[in-house]
Length: 113
Image (cartoon, rainbow, N blue to C red; front, side, top):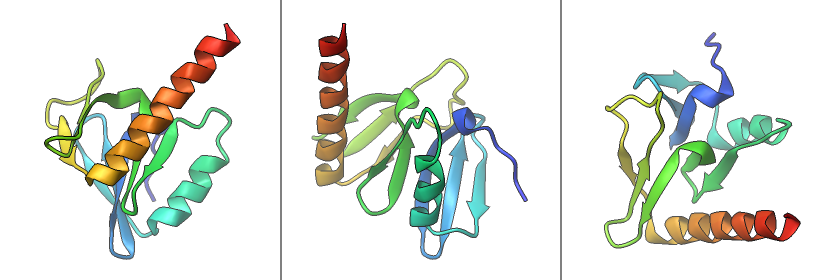
């Protein structure tokens, strides 16, 4: 059993029938859950900051810093984020979806103000 605060999770990556939780302190925890099971738990959160990116990744939007389509890279940042976690390779299509989602969220927030 592993107890982790959701704000300490940077991303969750699928690994077959398992999932790897990457934490802000640089630790990686192997979970015996498939990604869709973890996604279902995140959807129940009141302030859900997690978004599915492609087939094999869920990211915490708080830590997304740069979406680099050219290099197919997602770069993370945050004051409590370990320097071991800075970027991961992600498919171009998944990055485009994430960029669209974040852009739309920003537009919705601007319209509310």
